[in-house]
Amino acid sequence: MQELRLPKILAAVVAVLFLSACKAEVLAPTGDVAAQQRDLLVISTLLMLIIIIPVMALTCWFAWHYRASNSEAIYRPNWSHSTKLELIIWAIPLMIIICLGALTWVGTHLLDPYRPLARVSAEQPLDPQQEPLEVQVVALDWKWLFIYPQYGVATVNELPVPVDRPIRFSLTSSSVMNAFYIPHMAGMIYAMPGMQTTLHGVFNKEGTFQGLASHYSGAGFSGMRFKANATDAAAFEAWVEEARAGSDKLDRAKYLELERPTENVTPITFASVDPQLFPRVVNMCVEDGKICMAEMMALDAQGGTGLAGTVNMSALIYDKHERRGTREPVFGWEPFKVLGFCSAEELEQMLAAKPASYNDQPVVSGPLMGHNMPQPVSPFGGEAERFLTLVRQASGNAPQL
Image (cartoon, rainbow, N blue to C red; front, side, top):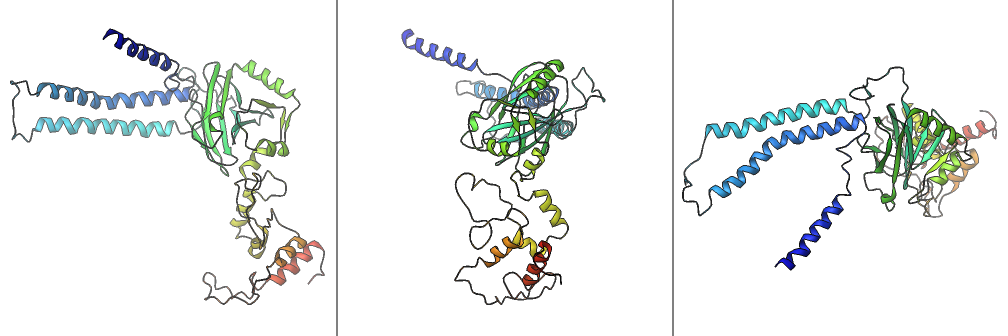
């Protein structure tokens, strides 16, 4: 029997040794925001244990006390009610739920990722004269791009930051939704294409900490990790000067090259950055000639561009079909994409690109609703010819009316 037990004991010891490599990062934070989140988690758990521990203990006690061999246990098959027991069963959980609700409501507002920090740590108040460190984050496939607009440098898969200085992250994504997470610093927050989210955090201790994409985002997700290097202010300034002394520049062309899906990318540092790169990433118009989402929304807010908009705007699609080797028709009779307002020649090309099977007879449909618009006499509306004339006038190719 002892020989049979020995392998089991050794297997249990080996399992414990493997578990010893795990780190309780969430419960051992080095930033004030993460510490407050840890406290919220611990307090909530302790409040719930007020119910869980007695229930588990009473379950074991009832099973032991009312066992078949215990003849002293009183059997009461007709028992149905106890006011004292009902009071305990309902009053205590209700009080715990009230406490959890109040704790969650307060914590949700105080730890809102969009809320600027009110302190550096529990012992150190916030200096109103201290400027937060701005970091623009772009989730790429499958790597992280960090831009420091105040210093004009950028990194890939590496985040140097100073300790005891508030950090304001502005996050977006190039393709799919991702989740940015540094357990030692603050909670996770989504990075989404075409949108900008915000996260505030701070490191209170020097060291190297793990950052990661906490939600699955594709084939290279497992390598989408980075190191956050928290140093003192002097060391951070020295790193900035060293980064500026490099030769690599992050312009729009370099970004489009960097944007291509790659896995397990080693850290890269850029000595300079196009100051308009991050706004263009958010507005999905890094490519030359592509209309920006902000411009499109501004035109829509003014009532749209009417007939011009129907032939000059491409659909807001940002799924990398063409860049990844496939082509999907977006606009026109044939696969023909217009990236912005086009010239008269491009407009004529699009309007003339009708298939041989197209029927030029006007489509007779029911009365149009909305603003009682007239029945169109062509697929482009009754004003198509006038619009072409106006475009030619704007480009200088036709006499003025």
